[in-house]
Image (spheres, rainbow over the protein chains, first blue to last red):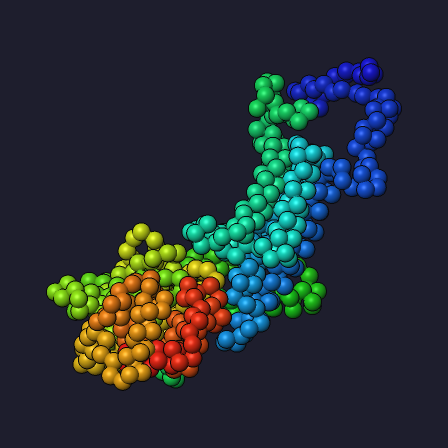
Length: 231
Length: 322
């Protein structure tokens, strides 16, 4: 659609001559309406699932991470109750090892990392002045696989297959020789989901920041530098 | 708890030079950090009170300069504090390392198993007289003891807080650590690396005693098992050799030389059973033999279906192994 653009020349100071582009604002109303419609969040469950706004996704990361923080805190409390006195039988050894591992894994991979990610997703676009992260759908995808990883871990825990070899799955304790069954696999699967979410979030939010620093442009999800070369 | 009031596991009650150095370091860190924390909280409370008084911010250049000076001073004090802790820590590490060069050494091999400790006193001159025990270690006081640490399965970590810091036992390699006790006592050690289901029940006791008493103990332990005297004891020995016991345990002097489980040549002289879980009483031993997994789930010792008479005979025989 052609815009009504006029060029004019004016003097800021006598020794400087600058040009400015004068745009008739009224001519943008149609484009603005189209864009607002495009960017408007969808409603209902489908809208919630397809939401890609960085503030919404960032807030979801933060809220979800705090939920896992509470679960990790409950696990810590259970461990402290067990350790409150010698020869306590509040938790049996197997359950204690599972809770010990769940606590560490939750705090590190389902709270500490995601909450930092959520902060970044929420604040980085605001800080650098972009409407959204470079890859909004990738960002939303990252959040959902993070949630899926956390739910998977806790479902496995509640059916008695929670990991029990420490928060970073101590080797060789987590190997088949000493940890038969699927418990180490449960932990590894959760980590795969969690780290995939982290990578997706990192890529989604870091590229606009790179662009601001590096002078490139985001073009339909592809990064191009000032000369138009794909990055 | 297991072997009397003397058995205390505490890094803050050092019984040897290495532990004493580490305890000093701990207190230096504690008081330095506590002082900084107290100062920080005092400034925080002062700022909070000042904020509640709604004092108008003083933004004159002179005040700004004084603030800058205060921040710079705090930065310098913090840096000096951290540097001092670093220097103290490195110095402590070097000092502990120097203990390793002392002579007057006794060498002991400690092997970690899921979930018990095997302790050997090698005797190159007479290999058949080497002392092998489990979950207990005797050392003479005022003697530098070299521990060679190895593991048969998973990673473990030996920690006897009254005598030294932690040292890992890594599959496929031998780590070393030196300990020394300055006074007689019984000190509790513990595995300090998550090693599976019964990690919490993997303790050992270190008995530090006068050199003469240690020599007596070692001489006694180097002897084979005594010959059973009574018919009950003889039958008990036959039970031991006929039941699965001999498939896993060694008793020097009879036809039982397996090494999967602890050496039982002097099992009844030890203060505890099951790596510190049970006092070494006849009743506890009977329970352990009958159904060890019920007491220590995951333990490799299987339940044994022995008739009551067989069990009593076996206990009578094991009672002689002191």
